[in-house]
Each structure stands twice: as structure tokens, then as C-alpha cells.
Length: 110
Image (cartoon, rainbow, N blue to C red):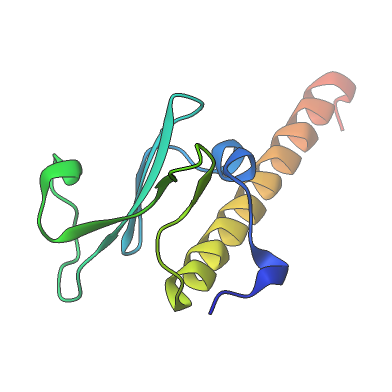
């Protein structure tokens, strides 16, 4: 069961993740039009070019029947995915801080 303390919303995922592969997960980010998360079957390490039609990729997150985004299945992969998201968020924050420091050096020469 997923840790409810670290569940994120599609709006949070959208701000952090671009379309691409993140470990065993593949994100398609065209939010707000769509936002999908696939998980790759065990023993497969790379997503194919057309992930939406590949039998080794299972759609795990998308719009649900009520029109809201959510996970189709509960499981450890939700926590695993959110850990990846938090690492990516930390990477983006670090990158932003480095850019701000570089701009400060360019402006003030120190």
C-alpha cells in the first residue's frame, strides 16, 4: 500500500517531470491534456519508442473514470515512483540554486 504521506497530485508531477524514462517508469507529460505513467515489466530495462502499444509496459496512472487523475492499482511502485519524483525535485532545486549563484557572480563579480 502506498504511503499516503508522500502521495502527490498530477499538478505536482507535472511541475517536476518531463516526458521520459525514470528507472522502470515512463512518463508522458502533456498536462493538462494528458499525463500518463507506465511501469516496465520486470527484466525489461528500456522503454520502446511507442510505449503506449507495448505489451511490456503497463499503464499505471492516468485519468480515472471520474475524470480525476490517479493510480489504477495500489502497490509499492507508488512509493518507488514518488521517491524518484522527490530525487528529481531535489535535483531541479539544486540546479536552480546553482543558476542563481552563477547569475549573482555575473552581476556582482564575486
